[in-house]
Image (cartoon, rainbow over all chains, first blue to last red; front, side):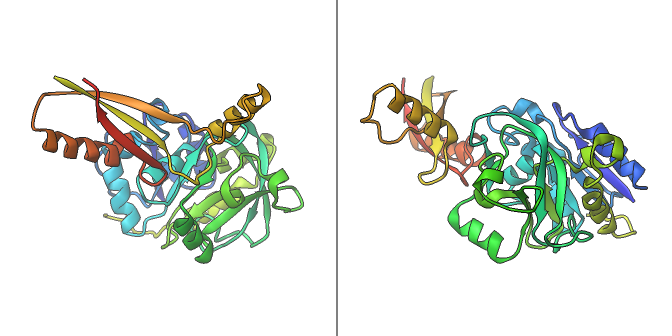
Length: 234
Length: 81
């Protein structure tokens, strides 16, 4: 399965994603943000980093990078599109996911492993997981605090599109286990069709024992398992 | 040439962690009269002296498409010189 891993100026997690996906048997390929087509790819990842220096707002400039028109076409055609950290912020700016990510509640850059609880398996990112399963993944962000207007939030919750919530090791979700003040402790969401999904923590950094956790694998394996065999031609 | 000033701020009711932290600090300093603090961004644009209505329409479009995020932010535009 060929996976496009998009690089913007300032992206810095692309090699980690390529490594983790290769180890799981996929064929990831780095794609520069000025490419205008993604034909032949079965999936797309927007990795973490600081695309375009996070100038203006996180993701605000990246969403107009030439490659994004192709990402939007793929998303509309049902291709799995995964946003990780900065990729989540870009997908929100592009309107492929609702809401936005703003500064953490305590105005601190958070760089530590956190627990997230699987809330739904109706997305390409969580289909191989179990509802209630607790995953330990590294969080590495300053703007990880998810907010959305009341209507959009109600739709997300009502349609079961919140995939992951911050919790503790026992799976308890409350203010004390919410690292960044994210609304409803949201750590990851999916589009209505379920093929576009994003999360703030980094599954690619929890994909082998030497990294301290292999819990990210289940998410990356879900993503890979969601791809159709024939290359999409969106 | 004229210069317009765009003030962008978080929509009412959405969390503003910088505003909350700053409000707390103001209260700690004894400025108990402060009710809320809102952070925002100011952007100024230099534009040719053209038809005001057309300029206003284009600036509004720039705000909606790029300069602000309409999902979480409101903005005002003012000609300053």
